[in-house]
Image 1 (cartoon, one colour):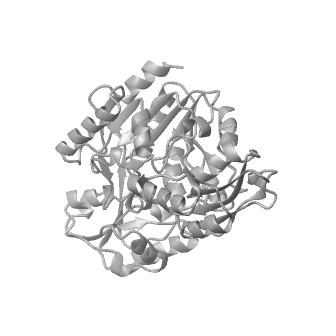
Image 2 (cartoon, helix red, strand yellow):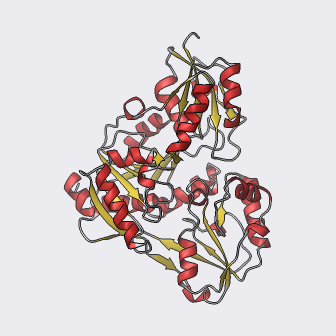
Image 3 (cartoon, helix red, strand yellow):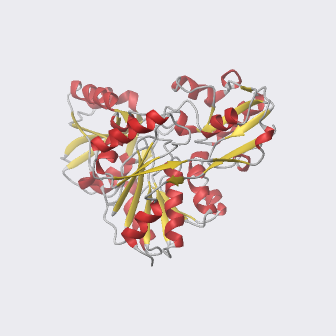
Length: 440
């Protein structure tokens, strides 16, 4: 191959997608390697021949991002593609400076070169940051569309942490499908709530192939974005969720600001638990960056089976892993519930952490006295279970989108916190969707 020698920096998501739609059969470029970060244990493998195409009969190696400069120099890399998300703007430019100093060009790819056009209407639900409440917004949209008479599939942002060939196209309609595909905790957190609502979920690695299969059985495609990435598909309606618990982040992160500037609709979530001044600040900033977008305010009311079980107890709070780690939230719904319903103490889990959970705290030191529900593989899931078992507490408050009792044995008494989107005032998402699509 005589094309531009290229390296793609990623995290097992946007990087693979950009390769598939732009580089895979493109003789003008030779993709020498991927680098991987953010997600534990995703480096040290290959993007396989079966997915890489005829130009890459040996596949493409995946290295840790810490090898970036060494790889650029060793392989005479001419171009580096930055292809992952939920990153502060200054960090992106630090990465660019490292690449430029090593002698290569630095590039980010936008919608025109990476988005796939569907033959069906597409609604994208993206966010300013991880943990803004995008998933519950997606669920709300899916149920509204279903009530309007449409059949919908949610196509979820990739989480391919296993056998990439087997994960090329995945379809989930039941819990049996989750077991069949050996889903991680992170995957189950996104897929199970849709399945509970009777909504089919697609995910995997090859997102054009995924789209073409989904188009055969649904009326509307719902892009269920993750990690504040922008949509892999050309949207007919773009909904972006903002979080007033992190005011200012709407213009400080990549590609969250891209989402903000291209949104048709904003959902400012969690207004019931946020500082009112922070809600105002977020609304003003969104209007400054994108004055033509419609703004909806929403709450995330909490539901607990037995709130009185929390009162007076020393509790361990478990929250969604990505929200606490690269999402940089020090707390979530579980913490709010524990405080609201009178926990005597929220016990710091760090002294009880073992194995890969200990490593997670070291990698993300800003994580507060909360246990992130990390489960990117069997060993990490077992370390999470051991950490819970070791904790000296009376009760476990589970603030994750799934019931962790399905994937591990929690021996201590526990209460699960649930939360759904509830729009406040007008317009509502239903108003906008009916105006856009009408009833089937």
